[in-house]
Length: 339
Image (cartoon, rainbow, N blue to C red):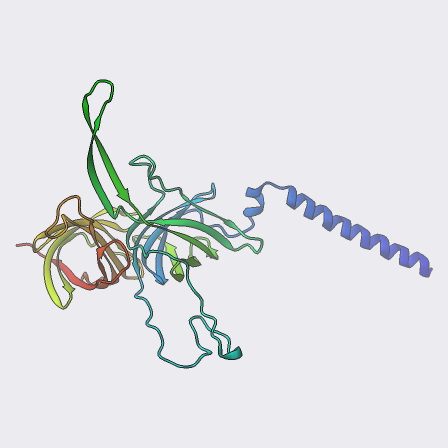
């Protein structure tokens, strides 16, 4: 009886393991779409995203069921941290070891801070300048993972006229060559999604960590702030008074076209308004003050808060040429009535 009971238990155990193994094999043999369907998906609606940490700003992220996604964002890099004056050898950047009085300092890779408007993907215009869509999927734990490339707008566009001599005919021909420089940074992320409610990812950038939090884009409780505005830019303690207009160009993203003027310059660009009350504004100053069309463009990129009742804003950020952010400005203002 003992032997028979043991045999029956063994057979039952084998059947259970066989059933489980068969289920695993069937799961592994199922199409990727079927297995991914078990995880919470970000597909279905654009996401209104607030970026915090090293990357600050606003974005609209849209995920597709083919494993790609798009990003439209306004970036303002956080000011760099000042080196600590502490003599505590155990408190280096990101923590450190006290062994032997040494401090393990985390060194970030070489990179250039990108600010302003970043669009992913970007068309191949001019040829050779295309930006591929972002890629997303799930890891073995069901977490949302992916990557994309931050690509700046053109920082320098120079038109060169090159005269060439045809050695056979002796004719002189003029070729027009346009050189445009851009900056790129690779971004990877991991996070979670609650479909139709919440998106949270931690992004690893060459400048450090950032946290992206999002909710579905909506116009509910988000006013249309189109209209005429008066603004004040505070740059090196000097005030510059400006007038500009905002025109909503995409209600599904709460984005606006910007058209403005200040003392000696014009500008145009884009503004984003988040359901959270965050407001981001990016524009290129055209032409650069005292320069020509061949000079490096000056970009303004600011982010802050907007009072939804008064339709007034208070932001901080950058206005300078592309490169290492240094020239920090304040930009504030509100909607006005034109007599």
